Image (tube, rainbow, N blue to C red; front, side, top):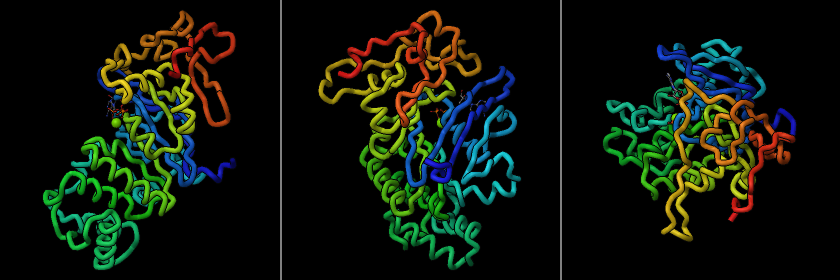
Length: 336
Ligand SMILES: Nc1ncnc2c1ncn2[C@@H]1O[C@H](COP(=O)(O)OP(=O)(O)OP(=O)(O)O)[C@@H](O)[C@H]1O
Ligand SMILES: [Mg+2]
């Protein structure tokens, strides 16, 4: 695959937050490649650095305290760290749109939803006020809300409808990349399914590439083509949906699957991953997962795991897959 097949390439991105209490190592040298029209799931527990990664792509990491320590982010082949702030304003909403983690607060309560969608269209598409408003109505229809409700205010909509409005705003300028940060977490399960279905349809219709941030593997299974598993600021495993669901390798990925309720045996107790998410202002030495890993050996406390390729599409960062490390995983019981 050539570079032109990718709309977004992140190489070795590292982001710290310099706070009064010390340095928070939020993102520690990650690589992400996003293919045109594909959806990548970025999965991990709270504090893993998912939102920081997303904000970096829009260059919206708050500075201070945020500092980009290393790396480059190429959008359509150009490194965004070389852009001026003015260039970035054009990119935000046009090339890349983001649905923020706390979507219910992203709508302005004193403006009608039609005006809010129209505002984005007007800025980015150079249309008149009337034309923008008409287009806003079309966008509402597209997300399944009657266009004549454009004159209503956010409080007149249900949670699921508000989320559809937010999707309409994010898609109003037909972005090449849509980043959705926990877009359905605040919704109940049936509405969640509707919103995911809608995102899928829109992605296919417009050939949008998506990064979907979630800690819900069920959501990933619904919509993602590829999955990156993030732990303590690093991608510990990456692969296609099949690689990750049918052939996961990293003990942390296994832990995520084990902690899901089992449909076949609902009486079985849940098995949450033991221990706590590490404090990114005081990361463990060696493999950041070693304090919680049942397979950890002495070497895991000191050596940071390199990436090992399992196949062209699948890699893992765990010493058990590095030749001669002496670390072994008994996978006998892994894939029951
Ligand atoms: N503005 C900030 N100042 C200081 N630390 C921050 C800031 N924003 C995030 N962090 C810290 O950076 C780390 C990564 O945070 P981030 O929000 O990227 O994680 P996340 O994976 O999105 O988590 P969640 O699933 O809870 O949304 C966390 O330890 C967080 O406390
Ligand atoms: Mg987050």
